[in-house]
Length: 160
Image 1 (cartoon, rainbow, N blue to C red):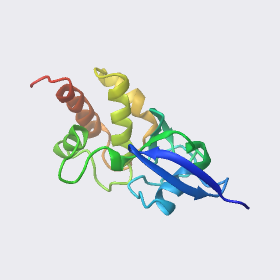
Image 2 (cartoon, rainbow, N blue to C red):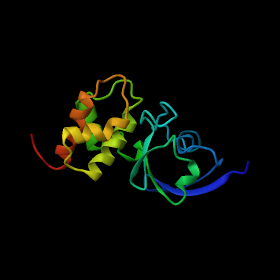
Image 3 (cartoon, rainbow, N blue to C red):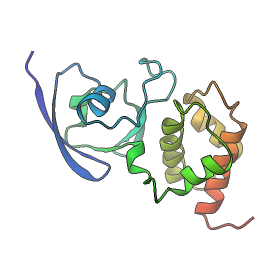
Image 4 (cartoon, helix red, strand yellow):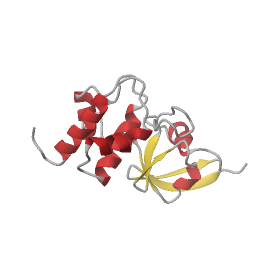
């Protein structure tokens, strides 16, 4: 099978790669581009561990073909913050202990960022609904939702 040349932007950086037509975006990110922050949980779009944005829309990268990234803007967990300069969402996940094993965390943070870009003032119910596609086996979700709501307040400039 002939590999396909793809030109895209990942986290604001112009990127080119070759992939098989059947390779998922998740496989390309992890295996070809060494962006291993995006995790594979289920491989069928049911867990949200592989959540990324594609042209600003939240998607499961295990359900998107790498070739579909042609000309697109891809956002991954690596583009959210840096180790010495965390994003507010990352800080709040740490502050609220909204992570344990870490498999779901990158997808939840990317999903939270997408939610707050779309709706900077979500209700708790809206946040729970938006993040319903992200499964976590460890935390029980309450800490996650507290981190999301606190992130929203902080990003809006509200002081507790």
